[in-house]
Length: 408
Picture (cartoon, rainbow, N blue to C red):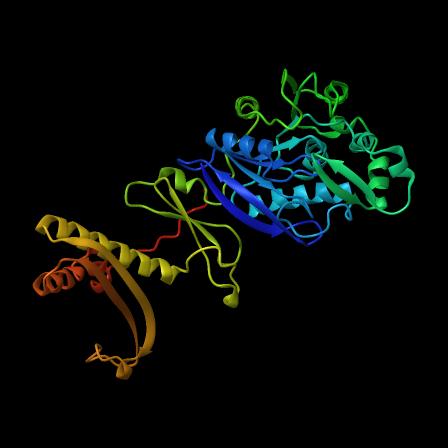
C-alpha cells in the first residue's frame, strides 16, 4: 500500500496530522477513518497495522491524531471528549472533500465510542466497527484513582506507560457521558469486536453495546488478543474480518475522481485533489506522487511544483537516454547526473534565442558525466542528450487536446 502524510483542520481549528493508507493497485473500493484509543496515536500498533491491512483489502483508510496527541497541534486534556468526536467528524469531512466520502468508521477502545457518536452526523457512513470499546465514555474513569477525580487541579494519569495531565473539565465531561445505549442511536450496521479476557475494557462493555444496538449487528470474539492489539496476527485478523463484513454494507466508493484512476491505460496518468488549493495526488500505474506549490504562494510544500516535475521528467529522460546509449556503445560511463532550471526572461537577454522577441522560456540543462571518457565520447553524449524523447516532445510543440468529461 501507499502511505501519504496529511494535515487538516480539526474541531478547534488546530492542525491535525494523519496518514492516509491507499491500496497499492487501482482506486480504492471504499474509504474508512480509523479512530485510535484513548491517549494513543495514529502510529499505535493497532492503528497502523489495521489501517494498512484494510488498505491492502481495497479500503483506503485515514488514521489521525486527535487534538494534542501525536503530531497534532493543541493541548490534550484541555478540550473535552466531545471535541474528539468533532475531530473525527472533521477528519471524515476532509476525506470526503479531498478523496472520497468514508463509508466506514473503525474505532479502537474509546475511539470506538467516539465513532459511535460521530456516525449519526455523517450521512455517507454506512457501517461502524468498534474494537475493545466501552459502552460509554465515562467507563475510562475507572482507570483514575478516586482521589485524583475528587482532587483539585489537573488529574495526572498514567496510561500505556505514558503520563498525561487532564483538565478537571475533561474529567467532569467524561463523568457526564454515562449513556450506555449509545449504539441504539447509531442506525448503521455495527460490528462489535472484543476479547473476552480484555483487562482494560471488560467484555461486559461489549455486551452492553451489542444488546442495545439495533440490527444489522454482529459480534466477533478476539479470543486471547490484548487490549492494544499488539500482535501482528491479531491486527491482520481484525482487518480481514472488518473488510469481509463491511463489503455487505459499503456502497461503491464515492471518490473525487469518479473512479478515473482505476481504469488507467498504459501511458495514462491521473491527478486528483488533496485539498482545494494546490496540493495534488498523482498516479501512474501503481506509482503515486504528490505535487504542490511553495508556502510562499499559498501552497503547503507537500511535493514538487508542476515545473519541478517538468524538469524532473526531462532530466530523467536525459539520464536514461545517455545511460542506454553509453551501454550500447561500450563507453566507460561510471555515473551520469543532470541538473536543470527553468527561467522566463526577455529574448534580448537570452544568447540562445536569436530571432525571438518578447518574453521567452529557457531550460538550462547541465550534464555531469564521470568515467574514462575521451573528448569525442563526451561530445557524443552531449549530442545524444538532445535526442531524448521528452526533449523532442518539448521542442516539437505537441498538440494538446482537452475534453470536459461528465462526472462519474
